Length: 219
Image (spheres, rainbow, N blue to C red):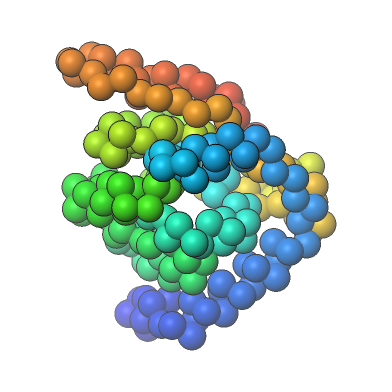
């Protein structure tokens, strides 16, 4: 049974259906996008940007992020069964999945994302995925941004009505016709660290900035 489920998730027809359902569902959102122009201009002028988000919030951005298809951005996605589905959806929105995570294949995937970022100027990273802990910025985002000489741009999703799952990260999906806000924070330039403690300070800086934007948690 498990093999059958995995085969179904990996099939093109199933991933195509899920992709279309997400697009149709997200089309009901009354979406507002804030503070996008600054970093977009930077990319268009030859700069590089790594968009960063909590795992809890990425669903609501999937449909809108198809607007970045011309950049063919990179995105690190785990090699899990769930990752197979997410990678299938991401590729259909014009993003290039790099398969790996902190637990498996992470170094290879990071190298791919860095290459994509240098090539096109745009990539994204889920900071605490795929398994948490919630609100913990893993070192990958800092390493990718430094290696590609990219700005980090955090972004956050909020909704006036949403369902929250009983998952490790309180994953949420806005309810149909919810007012949803996609807000980009200001660009962050990281100065290359000389020591491990300086690297940790950079990681902690991003975590401290973004953790207050987690929704419906006690953190």
